Length: 63
Ligand SMILES: [Zn+2]
Image (cartoon, rainbow, N blue to C red; front, side, top):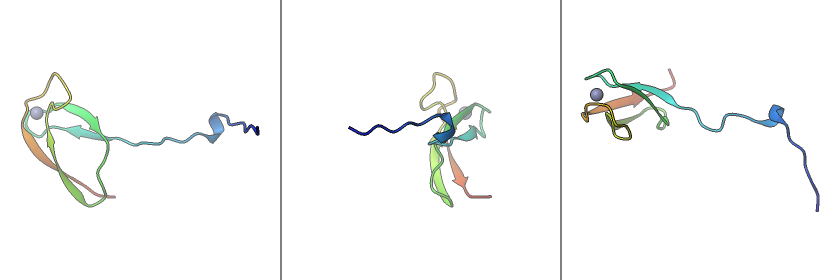
C-alpha cells in the first residue's frame, strides 16, 4: 500500500465562520456563512443557553 506524507504546511482552513451579533440584545456568536448574496433568518440563542430568542435576518455578501 502506498503512503503519502502531509504536514501542517498542507493544511488549510476548511470552514470559515461569520461573526454574528444580535441586533436586539447584542449577543455574539459564530455561524457558518450562507451563500454570497443570500439572506438567512437567524434565531438569537438558537444553539446557546444565552440570547433573547428573537429572529432576525442576516444578509451575507462578498463585501
Ligand atoms: Zn438577541
